[in-house]
Length: 125
Length: 369
Image 1: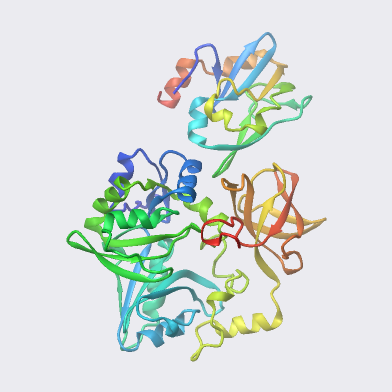
Image 2: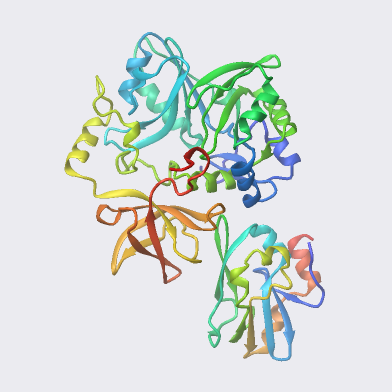
């Protein structure tokens, strides 16, 4: 199971790449493996204000629907609009399959996220 | 099942674990949900052959000179029409005409009957039938001593012949026969829950693992409960606890073909069904598909016609064969005709759906339907 060192992680299995004040978000390799065959993805509208730990997107496998949470608070500035037409890409390449970007309103929230070592330990990889 | 209660293991449990299956509790049993992936296993059944562990299901045996008449008083279909070696789909009802269980009943001898019931209902069915038992009928629940698999798909009969020998001719659809499997006796029924041709094979528990290994060696791909659910939903087969339950009658569920309302002697619940048929059904079980690339249906979602809530989804999934969301739902009779357009509420939004004719997937057994 891949857990890249240059990313941060949430307890709800999102990964976060930080560039300046923008956080790019996807779901981890562990999450895609747990979900199994991903068949549907619903992304937030750009411009939406989101709060850390609130559900902002939905992802569905053949069997069930799950929420994807905002790792940090801020405004959705961009979504990966190609992804919902090819949701299986999340299974194949979870760390390239980013879902949305948040312009952070409180970068201090990043302190609450896990680094790769902590996430690896939390998921037993 | 109560929390903390232990889950049961089928005779094939170790084989599933060795294959790396993802195991989860189902109806009190620890069952394989998937091995390599639901989509892949689903396609294997539609295109070649898959094999499912169905050892969790219940096997009841009845015998005696009074068995046929007694069973006919409890089951909806007309068991007197069965010749030895023949079976049919039928239902066990409560006094209110509601469904206790749906099952397949086979006549396996002059006065011998074999019933295959749902895993989640073994205890309830057995208690109900024992409670109604009459002199001259003997009842044996052999569920614990039997391993069972469903071999399904366009190549299933070829795989069966390879394992049981070229001389073993599979019975006709909905017929049953027995064959030797090593030192054991195997019961073979030409039935299934996938919409594909195939057989269900019942052997003593001790022979289960050997049978499983032989079927895999002959080319059957292991398939889990995840694919079993997507396959049965594409074929619009009801699942007890979702489409069926004590407050639903077989008429509402669209199972009139398995209800012999006019049979001699009647059956428990028949009066209620007759009144319901005369009064007209208020709700019907329908199949529907999502239009476009909308979210897959899930049990509990509401269906709307304009502002009116007209139905509720009982089962839903993403259909691997049709590449869209599909489901079944109880809807008001006025909104139940094929072609009716409704809206499904998903996470506060409305998704267009259309009522469709059953089955949704028109290949396999339903080619050209």
